[in-house]
Amino acid sequence: MAAGGWYIYRIGVPIPLIEPGDTYYVLTVTGQALVDGNLVAIVLEDPPGNTACCRPIAAPAATVFSTWSPFSFAAPVVPHTLAVLYFITYNAEQSYGNRTGLRVEFTSGYFTPE
Image (cartoon, rainbow, N blue to C red):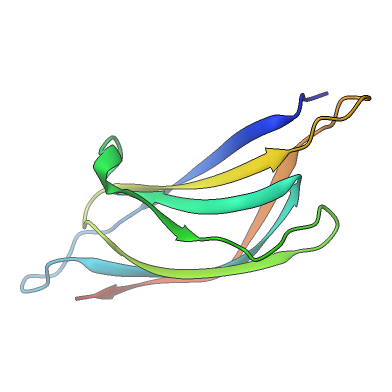
C-alpha cells in the first residue's frame, strides 16, 4: 500500500548525435497516461543533472484513474545527452491506504534537427 502524497516517475530518453550544421533537436512526443491519482505535470530535464534546464512541458487537463489521458509536447533538447521525463502525480490519502501507479503509452516520438 502507498500513502497519499506526491509521487514522481521518470524515464530516460537518449538523444542522438547531431549532424554538422545543426545545433539542437526538437523532441516531439504524443502519448497517453493512465495514473492512479492525478497526473499533475510532465517535466523535461535535459541535460540530466542541470536543474536549471528542468521545465514543465505538458499538463493534462484532467486525469481519472480509469481513463487514459492524452498528452503531447515539442521541446528543444541537447544532442548526445540523456533527457529525463518526469511524470509528477498526486495521490489522495485514503483511510485504507491508497495504491498509486502510472502507465504511459508513447504513440509517436521523433527528433527534428534545428
